[in-house]
Image 1 (cartoon, helix red, strand yellow):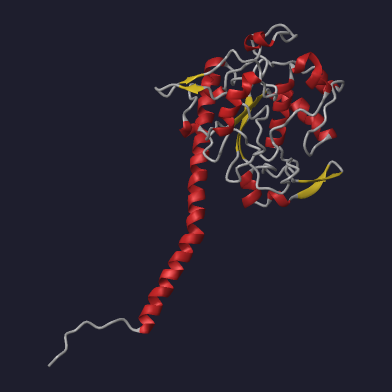
Image 2: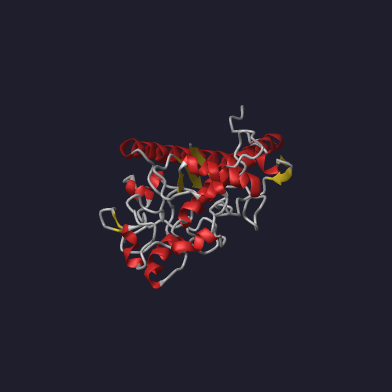
Length: 321
């Protein structure tokens, strides 16, 4: 009588199936994360592009890009800052740029790699990291406290609530650094000559810097900075270094000069190869992190400004200039 019972798998067949499953699992573990990161990077660049378009629309309406937080307001005619901090909201720009664009709180246009507003991951909110979050209403809009003076890095009682929000809120807007190209060109020439690596010197008597007047007539260039997959700004957001101009008149021009320096670092391409020295994509995909070269008779490398992570991956940088 013919046996119609089902036949089991042979050992070779089972081993073949197991091998195929192992290969597929290996591919999933190795290729999957790369595909996820590539998708996140594409979303990041799309969001940066949207913010760029919104800033360009603002420029069409107002003939300038918006000022950065802490910059001297276009309406501030007095060269002396107010003695009373309570009067600073009328003298400095204290509105976050995304609020001017009417996208404040729109996380589709924020930095999805950010874990908080602390981009250096040092437990503090630096001057160029600071961007008011405000209180979210039930309808999703925000109350921003414009009665606060300009943030100076000191977490006083008045700033405690706002700083706590920034340390615990995620994601954050992209870091936005606007400059005037003519002013930046003068500062860039000075830094190329004196401190090409990190622009960490300033001489108020140098003729290229002595007559820089802030605010400029317009802001006609900017960079957006994302912490990127490495989730760190790696020291690109300049902090005060004790230059005389940072101290005089209660630091009236402090944010402007820090902005010029951050723009210099973000756009630095000392070997003129068309790749930004500190950009994540250039450093991880095109070997820019390993570059070392002669710049005007001085050996320069592409170590990041961060003293703790000089050979890091770098942030993602979007330049409009």
